[in-house]
Image (cartoon, rainbow, N blue to C red):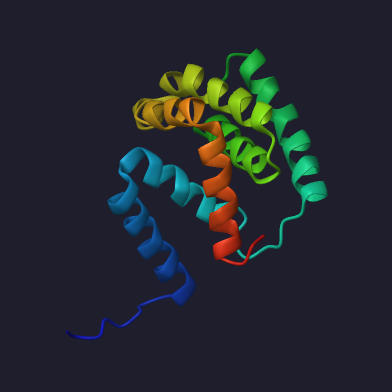
Amino acid sequence: MVDKPFPGDLISELRAAFDIGLRQHFGDDVGALLAAVLKYHPGMKIDDTNLKQTIETDSGMILEQVVGDRVDGTTLQGICEAMIGSALIQDIDGVNRWAKEGEVRCAKAGPEWAATSGQWQWVLAHPLQFINCARAIKKFVGDR
C-alpha cells in the first residue's frame, strides 16, 4: 500500500473521505444527507439558541423565495440547512416541515436538485432516525 499524499487541506480530505464512505455504507440518498450534516457549519460549536436564531433568520429568506415561487438551488440549500438545523435541536415538526418543502420544490430547482427527491422522501419517512443520525454525526466530529 502506497501512502497517498494530501494535496490540500487535511480536514477537507477527511471530510471528502467521510462523504464517500457515508454514501457507500448508507446508499446515495441517505449517505448524501448524512454528508450534508457533516458539512453543516463544520468546526463550529453549535448550541440550541444559535441554531434556533439561524433557522429563524434563514426561514424568512426561504419563505420569501417560496411565496414568490422563485425556488432555485440556493433556496433548496437553505431548506436543507433549515432541516438539518431543526434535526440538531430535535425539532421533529421543523424537520418534517422543511423536508416537505424540499420534496415539493426540488423538481423546480433544476435536474440536480430534482435528483434529491429520494432524500427528502427518506427524511419524511424517517424523521426521528434523521434527527438521531444528524446529532450523532455532529457529536462524532466534535461540533456538538
